[in-house]
Amino acid sequence: MKHFAHLIIGTGQATGTLLGKLIPTKTAIGVIEANKVGGSCVNYGCTPTKTLVATAKAFHQAKRGDFYGFQAENLTLNYAKVRERMNSIRNGSSDGLKSWMENTDNVDLMFGSAKFTGDKQVEVDGQTYTADNIYINVGTRPSAPPIPGLDDINWLDSARLLDLEKVPEHLLIIGGGYIGVEFAQVFRRFGAKISIIQRGSQLMPREDEDVAEAVKEFLEEEGVNIYCNANTIKITPKDDQKEIEIEVDGEPKLLIGDQVLVAAGRISNSDTLALENTGIKVNDRGHIEVDKYCETAVEGIYAVGDVNGHGGFTHTAVNDAEIVLDKLFGGDRTLDVRNTIYGLFTDPPLGRVGMTEKEAVKKGKRVLKATRPMSKISRAKEMGETKGFAKLLVDAETDLVLGASILGVGGDEIINMFATIMHSNIPCRHYRKVVLVHPTVSELMPWVLDGIKELMEQSEG
Image 1 (cartoon, helix red, strand yellow):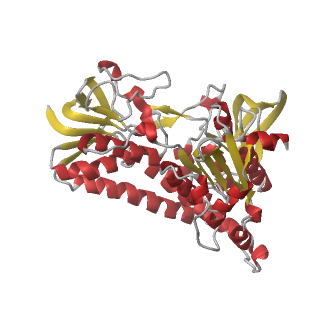
Image 2: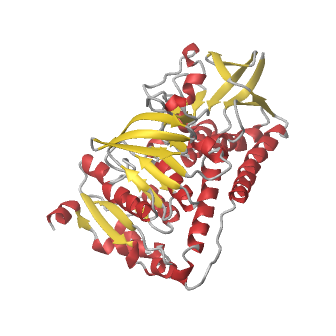
Image 3: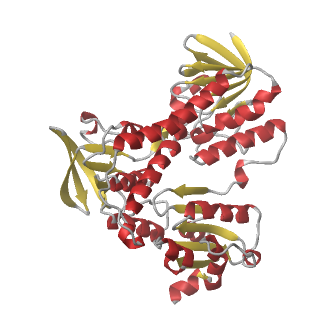
């Protein structure tokens, strides 16, 4: 039985952050990985998908040559080259993290599935390890809805979709959330026919209706078929095709495609750890319960990343690790002061921070709202990228930003400015005075506030 000062289960993005501070302590560190080093972000998520997003945008822009005043003839997509570039980037990230751990004297990297046999006791392939502190970073996995016939086909999750060696002819996507929407645009731009089947009445149900409708509009302009209020009745394999029977607003419809992507949510991997042998508590969604320092019900055992249910993003996983390190080495970061922030990496992208409009209203806030379409922003017009809009929400009582949704060119970068403003409690009247670089899209964000009105006034007007 080997003992470590620190034992990390899983090698997602929180692990690299933990190691950066733990390695210099010169104490014994164990790291356990059940699959591929780097977790979902590096291998199946952010790194490969955003590489595809960049390629899809470049290919799409080249086709817009007439708009910009040039001719781009005989454009063809070499998907083998596209995948070669994607794999080079993601494998480089995974191999780099693996090499770092294997070549660090006080780190032992072990492969296998970890099972708890006690509070501070973990078994891997018949070997038992104990530790002073344990960090659970096992993430989540795609979930499959109970659709009759789904198990009879070789359906794809996001990882298996990336392993395809050719672009599908017709990709049927079950789920209209962020993963489904991003892949829909990418593979439509690569030449596939795309159909999104969304059970609810709105694409991306977590977003405000105006945001979701704008995304739906530009996807449909590119030829993506979107079926909302669609109930999937049955899936049937037929030769090399898959038939999906759906009901749209009660009306039957048959969709036929060669590939089916299931993008209907994710479930926690906490059920792989035999946590019943510990005092660690898990909620009804499978997320490990933690306090504001990411510590579980067992002292010295922490849960970071997607498995704790407090974020579900790479940046929140990294911040979880920073919170734990502050608890261990001194610092004031906690979960309860973190604002929700994320991006949807369509083209144009969506950046969002804080509350949505519907969340703010539900919480009884007096909300001031200001919007500006990208079509009225000079830099967006100059770039020929005028789809989308900026929306700012302000607390009428405090003059502090409640939330922002930036759907438009640069929205995924601009939103970080609003995260800083919110974290620093900068009143809007101060932000309005800031001088920003011209010509940029972000320079117009303070000016958006000139049109701010209370939500009640806007509904009456």
